[in-house]
Length: 425
Ligand code: PLP
Image 1 (cartoon, helix red, strand yellow):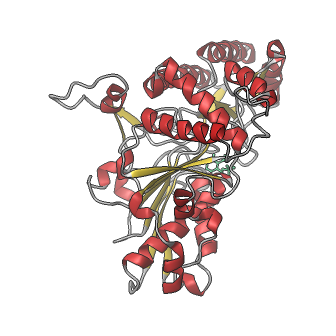
Image 2 (cartoon, protein in one colour; image 1 turned 135 degrees about the horizontal axis):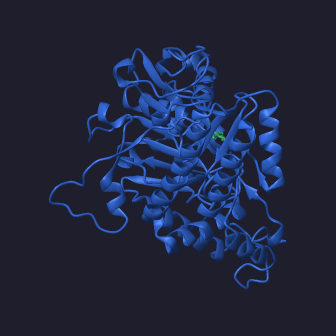
């Protein structure tokens, strides 16, 4: 079965490492010699309790999650957190100041997923308990694009307008469909602090958003959707976030679990807030219910969490987040380079300006009559799948998640180069 596997460049659910799948397939029959399979074992068993605790610990260590933050495991995907983040942050706002006249939710729109998240906020605040809650657009990446509809780059900071005293500042770190991502700049390590091990990756790198606009140290209501970049590189200024969430199905495991890293002051008594007038929060979205219930207030996605644990163990053996930072940087550089060669020869065109280009999802167009179909057919013949762009933007999308190896990327790059030559004939 392993020999028949194709190279999967799909956007999600996406490839998982082969050794992990092999180990997991054994565990489906018999988990840790319990005689019960991992898909059958109780979520309250001591074996699974140890497993979920280990997954939490691995995430804490590999991402350097500070003790100010809790790591929770929820269901409902990233989509459920579009609501979960809003509802818990509004409950927090009501508890902090029940008399506040206007509450604001600030959205930074850089692609179709942030637009979807804002849409969810719009629908949540229509009723009486949403009175006085305003959904504000900090910036819309479509403005200034060539057709006024596409997300071609992350807009410059001079265009951003945060509201005063907002209750939530939302951004999507990597836009899986549009292929835009906040930049990662090299900055020198802090003088006098020689970084060691995994920390070196953190010290060397700095993202361009939105942190330089938000002075460090305040309890910012900053919410980041990391669904498609989680664990692919460090999260700068993680400690300054209220909430970071990610469905695991791109870089970490099978669909079914959403990791929510949440600062303690954002884990609030949502029922007390509702009594004051906040929008009531279903128990399945209440961060406090998950914290109090030690992540199993109800039945979690046992299999998915278990596989995440295997992937994390493997990550640690390979060198942790610093390893993936360097690997993913090399992978994306190779793909952008060949697409730019195709651009120079008028065969391909990048959809996103390179400085805003995603490391995880490279989106481009194949120019010319029938050329896209030829491209996909040739890829298919070579065992490379999942390259068709999202139906809303078309073109080609190459997803380069952690499980896609550098050798697989080299094969794709060789094919693209060959394709460019053929098209020129
Ligand atoms: N956010 C981002 C960035 C995504 O890529 C996706 C799905 O691909 C979602 C949110 C929605 O996640 P889900 O399908 O897990 O609800």
